[in-house]
Amino acid sequence: MKDALLATLIDEHATVEAFASLLAVEQKALTSLDGMTSLPQIVEQKTTLTQRLAGLEKVRDAELAGLGLPAGPKGIEMACERDDRLAGQWQLLKGSTERARRANLTIGMMIRTRMEHNRRALAILRGDTGNAAPMLYGPDGRLPAFGL
Image (cartoon, rainbow, N blue to C red; front, side, top):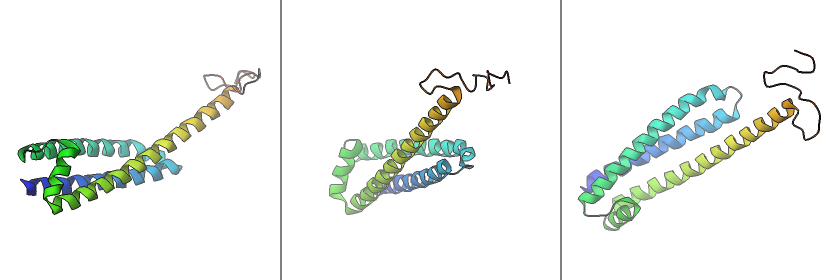
């Protein structure tokens, strides 16, 4: 049973590494002019990897239960106390997970920054500059002052 748990941890680690690699691709896409077209595919791949990770976590919890251990981090920590191979693989997985978490936070900040930039640009185009100036562009994209 410990061999199955070790194999699951190895699979989880590989999947997290694939997810982290995909986050690097997403980060590059967010910083390039033509990268936006690849975002839907990246999101789809991230969803697939996230679902795979959720399934592997369930498998890991079932394997821990088979060893008479509780589910989740507490159970895996207990299993690691009994097996150095598990402990080493668990440390690799935790390190990869932390790197992916930090990359995901960076991407979140990038997206929020881009959204704020877009919000400000739209406000300027609409004439929402805080003064009583007329709108530069109407909701339909036309210049209201000129009827264009």
